[in-house]
Image 1: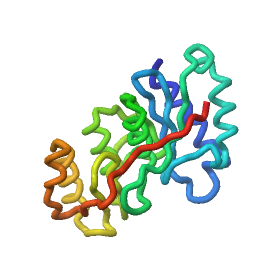
Image 2: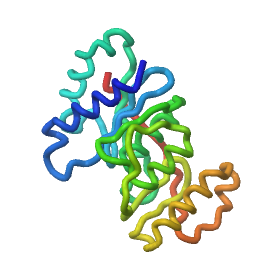
Image 3: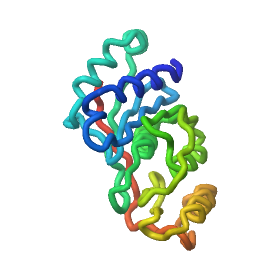
Length: 196
């Protein structure tokens, strides 16, 4: 199993009508240490999301699928406060809930600084560069934390605070003093459904 499968799926997604129409929400494809795939987009995916039948057919026609018979999951929204469930974080939260170690992920767009920092903290290799700019909202996939310019204007301080938060144990995170970020009231919980 190699990362090329993920890269090829991202290329395919970027050519599909379900991706091209509307605002082109970022889709993310992750590979686990067990050789399974987890796919999502901003706000999560379900088998009722448009284009999933075509995605299933595309995957089943690959040599990789025939040779490896992996499980392919669609990652749903993981919760937390607000609607800022980024695609990459939906994949990471679903992997956690499945008890799988995510090893590689690629998104249809560069990783926002918060996603990039979170993936680095989780030890997940990314096929994307870190985007410049800010995010209006972002919800932590593993802890009670939200950030974004919708909360405060100091994005760089929020990323520093996210990195500090990620270095703490779960018990220490509960006592974390938020200065530039917001404590969440809901514990995020990854969820997924099997596509194939």
